[in-house]
Amino acid sequence: MRFPITRPRRLRQNENFRRLIRETKLSVDDLIMPLFIVPGSRVTNPISSMPGIAQLSVDRAVEECKAIRDLGIPGVILFGIPDHKDAVGSDAYNDDGIIQRALRALKEQVPGLLLMTDVCFCEYTDHGHCGIIKGQDVDNDATLEILVKESVSHARAGADMVAPSDMMDGRIGAIREALDSEGFPHLPILAYSAKFASGFYGPFREAAESTPQFGDRRSYQMDPPNAEEALREVELDIAEGADIVMVKPALPYLDIIRRVKDKFGYPVAAYNVSGEYSMIKAAALNGWLDEQRVMMEALTGIKRAGADMILTYFAKDAAKLLR
Ligand code: PBG
Image (cartoon, rainbow, N blue to C red):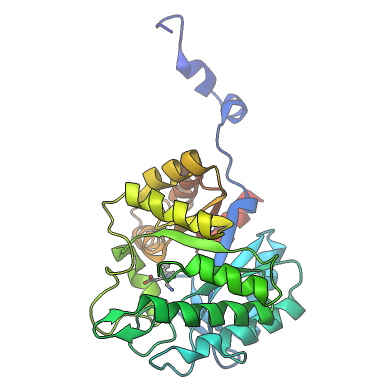
């Protein structure tokens, strides 16, 4: 392995050599597109901090999902923004709630696309926290009861997979048990297992209208410096019945993605979150970065780290380039 006998540049000299030895290949198969659903019809409400992304009414989401499916993307994850928010986020488990209506329409009008739902309460509560408040904090066990109701309601409306993002302890087990006893033993759970209390969710909170009205989410989302704890969270979720485990955000946590993949060998999802998207968009709009190039580099890096699938607002743009 010594120069001049070994010259790594020999296999870099043209694109065909590079193609032959390329280790990581990003594919449209790896992508999941997040969508924000709002009440009304013919609503396309652009999110200023996320250029290219908009809140959509159900009819517009149907059109968007047809385009997503026709690009070959396997699935979408839906976030609902209800008309009416209250202390317990009751629209989240109303069989006629915003997500339930979207699921029924999409199921019927866009066959062949996986419909995943974010299971959480921050978009539905008037205080913006991810569960029921007791004192100044979210009450874990009381929240489990409504997370279960929300998941079962999504399943009844046609969800193909539920994705709890609340970070309450024990929620995967509680949801698994309820889905099984309500007739959905085959419905998989995508667990937001290692979800960090991140500043990179900033633009999402504009998109989902879910900024906490007091305090922050640090008493339930993970502390960014912790990796061993992330592995314990993943281990718990797998033991409770998670089918796919998620690391979120993606780019500042590539080490966690790699360690989760190596340690458990489970399907791993990574969420390339709103702030990661907006940073690239903002720099590109200023002419400071080549958008397509850094988008593909970032997504490929997430896959190289060990992610089997990537939830990303770039899903459509990347799919167009990958075709
Ligand atoms: C919670 C949820 C959040 C995101 C996905 N699910 C926000 C939060 O925890 O505050 C963030 C996704 C993103 O930033 O793109 N329901």
